[in-house]
Length: 460
Image (cartoon, rainbow, N blue to C red; front, side, top):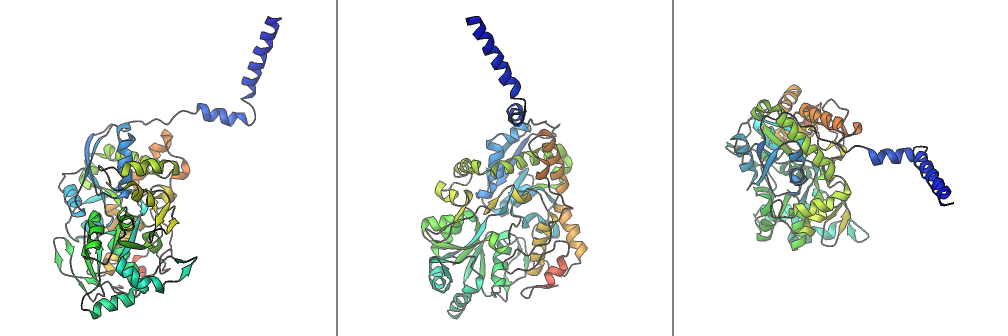
């Protein structure tokens, strides 16, 4: 009797195993046995590498590629080294003291067109989209807060710069121009702050007088600009060196945490899904070490994709708060990394796209993202003479290298780390967009037409 029962049990087990291959169970079975993606290492020309970064949350792809072993998987032995400021970053990459670095988008572009220090620099990878904000001091906030339209007792966002007009006039009448902080003359923050001010009828002035750091000094301005390293921004605001600043995270949220300032607008509200920082190498490095360049790009793409999974952001924020990377209060880092952003203290709002590391093709170095910065350099006088359309396209193709990104992405597709929909269908340019604070249309293929549309700054 026991043997008969045992036979029936065997039959039932066989039946259930067989049935798991049928109907809706097949897909689940495939998921269980699907092979784990495996990195296929390239024949690397150089394996020991030193990369520089500034203590900002948008250096995250570098930290994650290091921390999760994405560099190691490619056969790369990477050391990450925090740098004091953006000038140091630029000089050390050009001088081969660093193999590559987290860099302001404007820096390699400016180096290519002869603004500031010349250098042949290349980017195969965009670090992120968005991620900056403009913060004003408590004194400035107290002067504008009551005039802002409210909804549910909270200021309506985005806040336009024209609310500052009376404040700018107030400081002018005291013979003490309002001073705002930027992180560098060729920084995304400089161009975003200027764009916001000009859209609100406040003239940030024209650059002139060449020197080693680019173009210093402005003419015809309603405000003054002061270059300050990102980690020093809250200190400068507290000390009264500046009344406002534009910077990346966590230094806007730090002002809220310390109770010394209020962010009034994010960069995404000024220019939706703008390209932000770049990972930059020298042209010589790329030509001498082509496989190493592709391997670096592969590791960073994987890190970007990992970062945009909401489940991974908490681990990323915890890692970034460590002294080796951003060195900030974890709660401050969390505010912008976990899908929210805090404006006035207690005014926490949903901001899932405040910092984007992979979605919206964030890692792809679009020519049009770089050309936008060239148009702003011309608008504000850093590029002194008018240029034809073809010049903008030729110059940006010296710096932006989507072909390297595409080679890396195709390998990741073959290895199973990416899916076909992760690769953009593009000729290197984003579609025209009017997602700006002033609703102005930008077509990266028509830079001169775009420059001509401005009424503040150069328009030729």
